[in-house]
Structure formats: C-alpha cells, structure tokens
Amino acid sequence: MGKDADRLELRSVTDDEFPAFARSVGRNFGGEPSQPRIERLRKLIDIDRAFAVFDGDRIVANSGAYTFDVSLPGGTTRGCAGVTIVGVATDWRRRGLLNRMMRAILDQAREREEPFAALYASEAMIYGRFGFGIAAPHVEIVADTTRCRIERPVGTDDVSLVDVPTAIAAFPAIHEAARRQRAGMMSWTDAWWRTVLEYDPPDDRDGRSPRLLALIPDRGFMTYRWKERFDHMTPNGEVEIQMLVATDPEAESALWEFAFSIDLTTKVSSFMRPPDDALLHLVDNRALVQDRGSEHLYLRLVDLPAALTARAYSADGEVAFTVTDATCPWNAGTWRLAVTDGTATCEKLDGHGDVALDVAELASISLGGVRLDHLVRGRRASVRRAETVRLVDRMFATERAPWNPNEF
Ligand SMILES: CC(C)(COP(=O)(O)OP(=O)(O)OC[C@H]1O[C@@H](n2cnc3c(N)ncnc32)[C@H](O)[C@@H]1OP(=O)(O)O)[C@@H](O)C(=O)NCCC(=O)NCCS
Image (cartoon, rainbow, N blue to C red; front, top):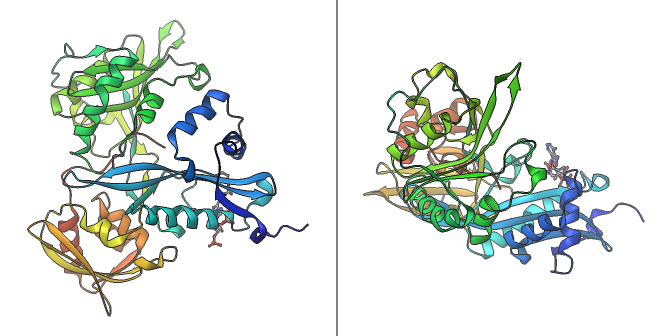
C-alpha cells in the first residue's frame, strides 16, 4: 500500500492505547519512556486531548493539549490549550499529519470554549503558520557570583529548605498570587505540582543534585539543583534555578540572595526568566549577569473577540484590526476593539481596519510582551497612520512583562 496520509485515522486514544501513545511520543523525540514517565504523562493530560494518527494498529503521529488557564493583564484568567508532545514518525513526515493534528487540537479548544492556545516550540519555524506568535519572550540568565553581589540585600533569614509535602501545601497559593501580577502564567493542577516538585528520577539530573525546594512562607518559593564541580582543587559549581516565584520585591531579592550564597558554586543560572527580571537591577555589576534569548511562550487566539476582551487595558481607545487567519477562519476579518474605562468590547466590521496583521502577530501583542511598533518595523504588521502604533502600544502596555516559568 502506498503512503496516502488521507487514509490514516486521526482520533483521541483510549486508556488502553495510552502506553503505546506515550512510547510513540518518546520515539519521535529520540527516547524510550520509562513506566513512571508514562504514568506521569497520563496524569497530566485529559485522555480526549491525547491525539494519535493510526496506520492500522501502528501510531505514526502524536500530539496533545494540557488543560490550562492562562493569566491575563489585570489579573483575570481564561482557558488555554497547552499544545504539547507533537511528533510524527520519521517515515510519515511532510505528509500533512501535523496540519491535521493541529486542526483537531484547535477545533477541540474552540469546542471547549478556550479562547487561547499556547506552546513552546522546539523548532521556531513551525508554528507561525498555525497562528502562534511569541507573546512572552523569555531570557536565560547566568550570573557570575564570584564577582557580583546583590547590592542592597534584605537577608535570607526568612528562607528555609522544605520537603516535598510542605512545598505541595505551600507553593500553589504563592503561584496563584503571582499569576495575578503577571500575564502568561499557566494554572497547574495537583498532578502538575506533583510533577514539578515530587517527580525527580535520577536520569533527569545529569550529574546534578536532587531538586531542592526553598520557601518564604506565603511570599515566595524557589526550586533548584546544584552541580558540584572542582577545577584544579578550586570549587566551580553551579546553581540552576528551575523556578523562582515571589509575590513581593523583598521576597524576590531574598531568594536570589539565597541562591547566590550557596557554597562551592561560582554561577547562578536560570533558563527561563522574564526579560524584566529584578535580578538585572539587584546586582552591583550588571555586566556580570548575562541575559540571552531562551524558550519563548507562543500564544494563539482561538476565539479572537473572547481573547481580546478578557484582559484589562492600560489606556482607552478604539482601533480596528484587519486580521488574516489561515487555520481558524472564524477569526479572519476586521475587528474593532473599543476600550472604555479599561474595559473592552470587540466586534466585527466591514471594510479595512487601522492595522493589518496576521492572528499570530495579534497574539504577540495581546499580553503586552511585544510592541506593535516592533512588529511594524519587522514588517509583520502595517498601519495606515503612525499614531495608531502609539495608541495600540499604550492600550496594550502592561506593568510587567508576561512570563510563564515552566515549559510544558
Ligand atoms: C515537526 C513535525 C511535527 C512536522 O510534522 P509533519 O507531519 O512532517 O508536518 P506537515 O507535513 O503536516 O507540515 C505542516 C507544515 O509545517 C511545515 N513544516 C513541517 N516541519 C517543519 C520544520 N521542521 N521546519 C519548518 N517547517 C516545517 C511544512 O512545510 C508544512 O507547511 P505547509 O502546510 O505550509 O506546507 C515532524 O517533523 C516531527 O515530528 N519532528 C520531530 C519532532 C519535533 O521536532 N517536534 C516538534 C515539537 S515543537
């Protein structure tokens, strides 16, 4: 039989099929998942959101979506499909299977009335065509702690190392409070918390310590590993922060100070931080903290008017966007966004708007993490009048950069 992708069946898997589904996920990323890893994945995903493409009994493509709520400017949250574990068997690539799976995931998100979808992209080139744009640019931070210090320390007396049960009881409320201060942060179920705090197999550690958990009650937490290393009898270890979340500036400073104070280490790094991370100004020597591009959060507006009216805005105004959307055609057309006293309405119009752009670009500006001015200069959006750019950027501006501290 020839390789006709149209004859393949695409559907959600059943519980019985889940282990084969998880093995397909592993194979397409070059690994073989252990039984605990399969069980963990099963707990994180609703079974009807685990999609597979079958060639007879064989799974030749897999994808899925986690059920999240994303935080929005102003402290509201809305449903968000967290697209994940996308893979196609090597012998079935470039035959349209990703196109079909993405269609199924986005149609399902729409049925579930989730205005947003989000993902992290292993290959940045792939997802723009499906309407995903970078909405929360993240940075990787590496600080040389032998030569720079926190300039105005608050002290670390309030920071304690805690065990997993204490963390599971204390961290979620802090995370929830932090979500009200920053857009882009996903809600986590108990299964997610158990994954990020409890699940710690030695083969994930790559020579580093087990995950360590630090808490400032009600105000902040940090999860990290440290790697011991000696060069010519001289300590040269590294502290790798996975998550550092705080609800007030003193707690944030105290957690960084704690990380900087860990003996036998010369570096503190964190892979995914917001570009306006406090650390960049907490230190006495900014030149000794590198911040470079990291994995960014991609967002998609599944239901454009619901997505744009859910957030609070920084300035009143009225602007019409003419939007293209090849994957979700219900979003295409001209939409008037009108904000009065910070509250938005969005309705469809005839004719051309003030700004022309693809839905991916609208997603990029939707949380305030990317400015329209930047997209216009990057030739990804066009405006009829220059003052529209200033108006849109004032309306969409947020106090803090959007950020989601955990890849999914
Ligand atoms: C990336 C991957 C999922 C694509 O699946 P696929 O079924 O081959 O993709 P499709 O044939 O449906 O192609 C969909 C579109 O994406 C494009 N595309 C696919 N892979 C691409 C790549 N690596 N880079 C750029 N564009 C790509 C195709 O050209 C096509 O565009 P078009 O519709 O405009 O013609 C698959 O190659 C894969 O599993 N790779 C290894 C795992 C991986 O990288 N996963 C991505 C996780 S973020």
